[in-house]
Amino acid sequence: MLTLKQAKELNDSQVTEEHLRLHAKNVMYAMGAMADHFGEDREHWMAVGYLHDYDYEKYPDEHLKHTEEPLLSAGVPAEDVRAILSHGWEICSDVRPETDMEKSLFTVDELTGIIQACARMRPHGLTNLELKSFMKKFKDKRFAAKCSRETIQKGCDMLGMTVDEVAGICIEGMKPFAADLELLGTDNQ
Picture 1 (cartoon, one colour):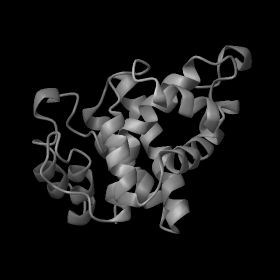
Picture 2 (tube, rainbow, N blue to C red; picture 1 turned 135 degrees about the horizontal axis):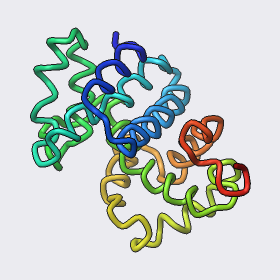
Picture 3 (cartoon, rainbow, N blue to C red; picture 1 turned 60 degrees about the vertical axis):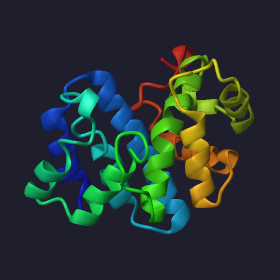
Picture 4 (cartoon, helix red, strand yellow; picture 1 turned 180 degrees about the vertical axis):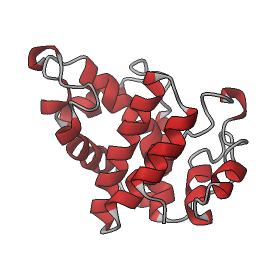
C-alpha cells in the first residue's frame, strides 16, 4: 500500500512548481475526507491524491503517459497506479474509475480547483466557506471556468452522490488544513 511518505518523496522529486504542489495538497486533503466518508484508510487515499499528477509538470501535453512505468518501478502498487491513471478518464486516459477511491479522485481533482478559487476570494479564506456560497460559484460557469463541471458531475453520478454532498465533505475535510493550503484569507494572516 502506498504511504503518504512515499507519495510525497515521489511527487516532490518530479513536481517543483509551487502551484502544482498546492494542487496536490488540495486533492490530498479532499481525498482524506472522502476516505473518512467511505470508511476507508485515510492516509492511503491521501497518498494517492498527493501523487495523482506525478508526470504533469514535465509532460503536460502527455499527462499520465509517463506515470505507470516509473511508479510501478518505484514500488507503487498496481492498484494505486490504476487509481491515479483513472483520474484522467476520457480526458487523457482510457482507465475508467471503478472503485470508490478511483471515482473520488476523478471527482475531487476538478472540484478542489473550484473550492480553492472560492476560498481565495473570501476574507477568511476556507475557514468559513459555506456550502451554499460554494454552490453559488459552482453554478456560475464563468467562475473558475477551467474546472470542468461536467467532469465533477460525472464523478458524483458515478459515486451515487450529489455535487453538494461531495463538495460538503471536501470543504469540511479541507478546512482544518487551510493554513497548509494557503487558504486562510487576508483577515486571518
